[in-house]
Image (cartoon, rainbow over all chains, first blue to last red; front, side):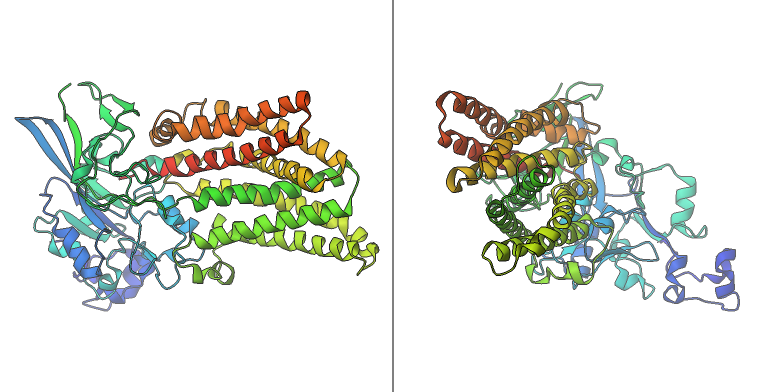
Length: 288
Length: 304
């Protein structure tokens, strides 16, 4: 159990917080000024069993419509039977310290809170989709009901009243750890101090605050693997199904990344035809 | 290597966010800015003498394409009724916001200049005011037209999920594309309206030079140089060798560059204005093909 949300803060606060809480035996999270927080996630891949409980809890908690996702579990398989292994990667907004989606938003609908959560305001969003282009992690989508951008918002409505994000609560393996990464007393902070962690695309300079313990290279790099698109979740108006002109229908004409040798070097096979990719997941109509 | 050594077998996929309205907007913006730049620079640098009728028609065409550009931008919004939010609560670090204000500024300056010249042309207003305002409008307009042409490069630069768009060549490339489109439209106007001979001649020179430079930037710069990231390389590969190779080689390079240059060369032999019309139309159509592949291909490279 990650104790950072409910635990009494007064006993373990550093000097920065001391003047706020020194006379109080118990300080609910919601009462602590948010500028003293810096929220982040750890996904512990040593524990994740790929059950999708986080995905469904997020859907339920945030009433996420069908066909779009705020968090999901990516499966990557390596090896050949009987020496094969499946890797899981919980994927979502990284709540970057340097978020490009916030910079590109023309109307402050996407913004960074003082507590480090990258939040969105659907009442302001004009649906320009620039934030989708700015995010190097595919974490943002357009809500089909409201026509506005949406993504993981760290369950800020829960966090503000002292609750943990829904995905953290529901995870049966305690593989998702949320909390203040600047507070040395929190579990997430202790894990960051003691475990080797990695992030997605550090070269982008976005300073992600979602860290993976035991992150798998091929799962972290989206272009590192061959894709079996018919198993993907989502409509055919997608990257995997060939969302270009729509003229190709369900059979994507395009390339794929694949490993070309046992050492793991990669080559771009741009002329491969993925055949009936996406045939099972609906019609292709990517153009207006 | 055994099949299925490493494969992603389950994932969530994402819709391609921007479709044909964005490349179309790039073309109409290039025309709006390009017509203004060629005319204003021609008048301002005395490459051809000032002609009020040419100014009135040219500025009207430029304004019309800026208006179409705005309509395409609004059309592409999921919530178009909220368009005015950009003006009412702008986030100034966004190049979408900055671009919107640059476009507005350009439209205001070009619009005021057009109004003064039009009123003077029809004798409603004496030419004194138009003559006095012209140098200010002309040079201010050139700066704003340049800004309107290139701000998209900085917007694409902010789109950090699409590495191919973050090209340091892009501002220069967009200016050159604006000159191709602008001079091409002036050649069309010359064929159908009959612009002064010197305007047509300068437009033709600009058209040829800009086409050659654009071809060089495209082949040597954008696609000849190695790309800094694997996602940019993958997108470039999709354009030059993948699913967009037909759009790129036949649409952009052949139709958009080789054909117009060949038609211009034929004009020297046959002296037919229709060849220039065909050349201009081919170049503008080819420009759309290029913008289409440049906008679409990077969006098809997965980010998760």
